Image 1 (cartoon, rainbow, N blue to C red):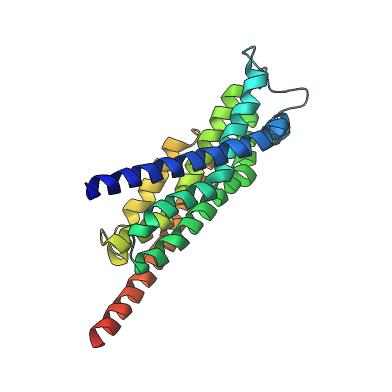
Image 2: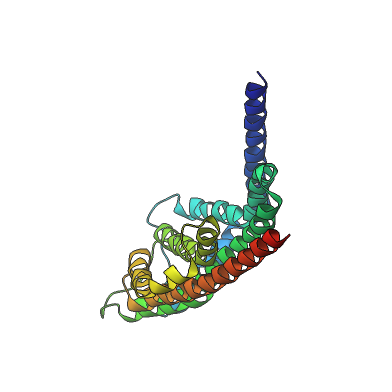
Length: 248
């Protein structure tokens, strides 16, 4: 009976945490909804600046001018609420972690959020201007470049997710080293395959142009190197802690 009560209490707490996370996203969305049109205009700026003179974006669906900005606002609300959402995850799992695990997980949650935001910022400020300038420059003569606002939104959200997730590579490597699934030396030995894999992922997740693929693949490779270095430092720290515990 006590086990059933314990399971029920955990399920109730999980429901409470999920509801709090959803409410945080909703609250941010309500705060940003008034600025939905401005937010979409800000998102479209890299493309609009790359378009030829007298060109503009178009809406092929009647409701697109209304729904596209609100769709962007909803996704942006989730991005902004990620720290609080991760805090709810942390609050749920923390009681079941050891003190040593808590010291590792808390910084990783903060770092993963920061890296995700960094990946999105890199996509917006670096990748978008270069990619859109390339696309508009290779348009055949006599073809007017006019992008549908829904298609553009889906395109940039895909890139945001791709770069945001790709920038989590150091966190993934640290976790793999922490769980013992691999170690820094094994990852270094696989470096050539990792580099090739980074360019394959860049080819699959970005538009079919060398610029976008390279702008995703090269940071992934560099982040892999950072992750290997941090994983190696963490392994050495664990070895020292184990030696101290043995001597004690």
